[in-house]
Amino acid sequence: MFAEILPLLSKALGETIYMVVVSMAIATAIGLPLGVLLHTTAKGQILENVAINQTVGSVVNAVRSIPFIILMVAIIPLTRFIVGSAIGTTAAIVPLVIASIPFIGRQVETSLKEVPSGLVEAAQAMGATPFQIISKVLLPEAMPGIVSQLTTVIIALVGESAMAGAIGGGGLGDLAIRYGYQRFRPEVMIATVVVLIVLVQAVQFAGNTLAKRLDKR
Image (cartoon, rainbow, N blue to C red; front, side):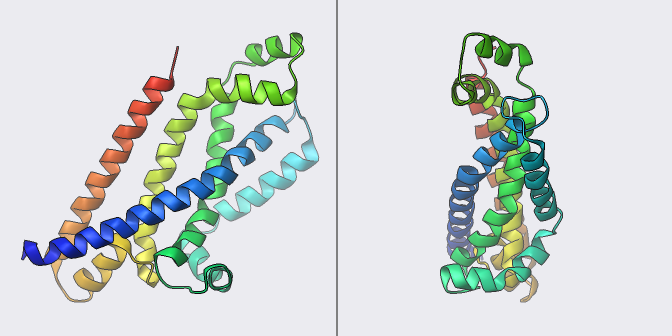
């Protein structure tokens, strides 16, 4: 029985890792600058602009308020336009990215808020530009916290990628639904859950280890 399930698990795990890695890379590339923008344009910050901050913040909050399963269905036309299909692992990346960007943005913003204001003021006193303050003070000081927050996002993506299986997104969620639930094979469901638990534990361990190494305090 295990020999029959193993190839299915291996394929599904590979699809899940593919979805999570690609989605995380794209979402971080957009979400990290978004978080910096949210923090630096807030009242009293180095690029204070309340209008931009409130507008961007409202959009972020609006997207974050949409349940992922609804978001997946709502943007099917967009997904089909971008990747040419609404089904499959590549198609699932589109809603995963859209759901993750505002999440990452808020997490990065939270980490940046924890940087002591005295460090920023000292940099300003020495004539540092806003870009220099962001690149040499804010981000380096907040990096351990950012890594910890991004670890949380990756774990959330693992769960959302499994949810994507409900509409043919592939991965472990698709395996659990099609081969476990619909075919009444509880051993497939149990194996899928075990693999997900191991994957999450591995991600959490790696994230904690990296955050500790980056923390120079």
